[in-house]
Length: 342
Image (cartoon, helix red, strand yellow):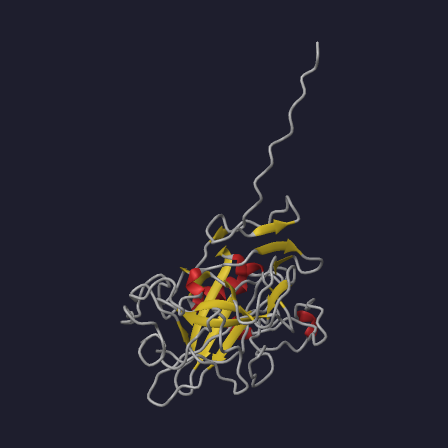
């Protein structure tokens, strides 16, 4: 009796880290490898202690129903256009240490979805891939060319209150990956606005971005429906296919910094080493001890990511600003230019 032969196994569907929640699938390399489990979200979600719900619409819409959204007539564009004709961010860093605010048209605006002032809210448009690096755990790379100024992805996760952010930081051991980012937004005069985001449990593809002392991405706080900033990452230069994507967790990149790492441990051995491999590598990941409660000495935990933004706000206008940072699998500390508010 002839033995029956089993047919070839049907091809398996490639793993999509984004679970179908992005415009394009986010693949994984090598095949069969699976990163640690987490709940995927394309945008921020409200976490414990959050002062505001990022999903709540708090900005009024513009009145640009029959005319294009341009400065002078669109209330969402107070100064200059945010993006050029190719949807690339116009302002990429500032020698003056200031960054213009970025507000996009929102859900209450009558302008169409194709409005030139709607970029970050459209989500991921590029083919990205999560991959296993040699020394940094998981990383993120592009599978296509990305021109300078193009929006790549957000750093999204749970928006936390300060108390909860500190609690989670203190529970970490030096071996744990730190995904929490502290975004501090400054104005010429007034309080500093702080936003804490943790994508460890609930997050998006941005959680896989590694730190680099010479990165190819720049983080910019962008506001759409709410005062809670969307932490948008734009290409700081032209990026080639299969190039790893990275940003500076400290916010120093293309921004003027006024000092050294805050809360810097006296013993460098307590800091996490940096494996970015750039010619200007500082040897250690950025460190911000501001989320560690005294009397806990800095360096007992893994440190953190932080980004700060300083803005040049015209007299009579209130302002805001922001920033964030971490390596191989996300972290917390700070420094970058500020963003004035509406």
